[in-house]
Image 1 (cartoon, rainbow, N blue to C red):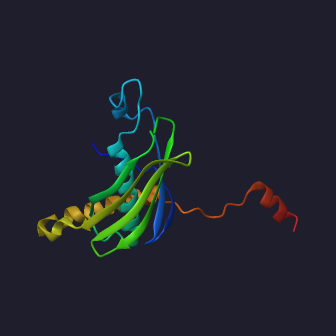
Image 2: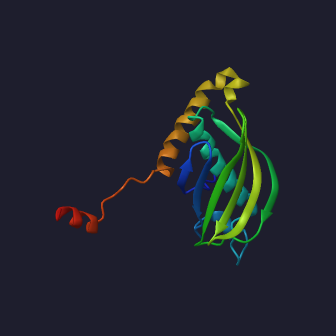
Image 3: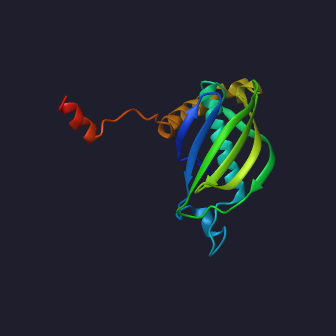
Length: 172
């Protein structure tokens, strides 16, 4: 099962930082078992939301050069509060150090401005074809898929004229 733990990219400063949101819905099947009568986003999925957030920044900053981004290490991981259905986990990841293959992020997730999770994470990026050249097509399919998904998640806001602005412009 694939878990999409980024519903929308809210802000992105290429090579520097990213903010995303994960809206938790009671419809998510794993909540039936975690926990019966007290559904909460599992801690491992809170960490995965931090990982996915950092990975989107890496992909965009590297022009989708790599097909695979994995968690290499999580340090100082702290869970501070629960994320319950109907709530939004707001995740921010800031680049602490960026090398060719490994990026270190300071990442945190909040609910209503209260800390829910925080960690320093190290993500590693690579292409599968580096180990097995026959996987080059698989790398490209993954990259294409991630570019399509990124286009759905990140839609930088453009200025939209509000009715009051258009009325003011009409009188000029």
